[in-house]
Picture: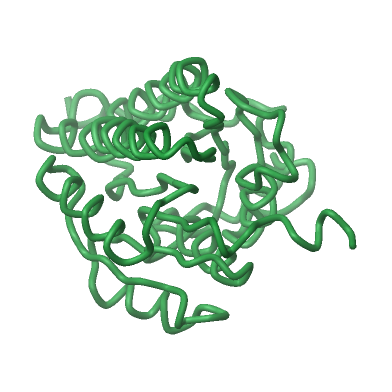
Amino acid sequence: MSLLNTPFDPAREAALVTGAGNGIGRAIAQALVGEGLRTVFADVDRERVAAAVAASPRPELAVPWVGDLSTREACDALLADAQAAVGQVTHFVHSASPPRRETDHAFAVSRETWQQMHAVNIDAGFHLARELARKLIAAREPGSFLLLTSLHAGTPRNLPHYSTAKAAMAMLVRELAKTFGRFGIRVNALVPGAIAAGGFVADPSLAKHIPLGRLGRSEDLAPMALAVLSNRVSAYVTGAAIVVDGGLSLTNWFDPPELDDL
């Protein structure tokens, strides 16, 4: 049997995906249940996550969970509920991120918006990953974690709260990979380009800067996510940042923000 036909072991593996109600998180969560994994779909929006579960290839394997991961209490509740629903979580995907507005440049972003962006991306990502790793280490089980960063971890986006959060996540992946590796837990980053999903609405003209000639779709990320998450396919990959952007990172396309309101 081909290795790629059996990337996961549904009898021993289960997944937790944050931001699973829309965009990239939704596509990855749906792909995981399609591979037979019991998967917790976590999101802040009840209707959105219910729709994601209903549209999954195998809804019976999908567990909806609703909460705001900017708080530690919600993160702890998610961990407990996931354990109760699917048992030991072996595959963790952190895709949750607050919406970003193009008007929130360096002079306009509020303290609350700044804190929310960092709380969901960094604080929640770190806490969830660390606590899931503790469980895996105690059970002597391997694991695979995947954090969604951004091209703007290294390229300014005119949205400093977003870019700095994603830059911190990029280093968090490397820190956790280095620490968790001895326990058989791999940690990697998926780096999307201009993906028309999850609240991001791109000007179609951006496609001219993309070597492959089009904006990305959430579904473009899911196959790579499955490959990186699979302990059979990517057993020797950790601390990596896999770019899925159609070649957009080969160009420099952002101008400084307009500051007419100063």
